[in-house]
Image (cartoon, rainbow, N blue to C red):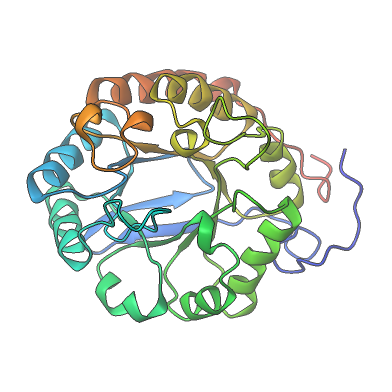
Length: 286
């Protein structure tokens, strides 16, 4: 049991916000989903490569049970020679896919100057490399759109929740946390995913927490077992990279799953939901 004590993240913590937060996403031009109420599955390409790929992938993940559509238009790549995404053109394809399927959308934003381009995107994703870009966090807080905040691979859990605090303290209560692993001495997987953080975050914070099994493992064959483990341990959703032909993906192909594999993962996780760990709220004693 977590010892109840004061924390530096006053608004992200449970001491002054005991009940779980429910984050409403979509509506109007897309289907409405609520993070924190039901298990949500985000699926789609890491990077939008062309219109055909985006539309076909959107239809496939929708048919397989995805509740939110992902698609990267701007990609922060370590190498300046890697594919950086289609930019605004990619966001247009994402909007078209949203209209086609009715799925609400999520895409990574890298700079506050891009906000106008993201008008039709339902969830603004802050990537791991920008988790402590505090000026960006404060600017996105003013947008009033739900923010999907990814855990930086080089930061502690407390630093993660304090980044969420920046968004909450600046007026936006709609934050969805995403655990995607941290960098350790281990090189067999892309990052090291500490699943014990999931029930701990659910005890410490009222914000919904999902898991990205694609980035954490970096290996497509591991996405299914990691997704199942995350489901059982109490994650409130998953974010999975899906590609029509992972072997030819322009970005992160080794960690993307095929349409068929994604469908199988969704079914497997849905079957496990009745057995998912129910975290006790230390402030309610339930």
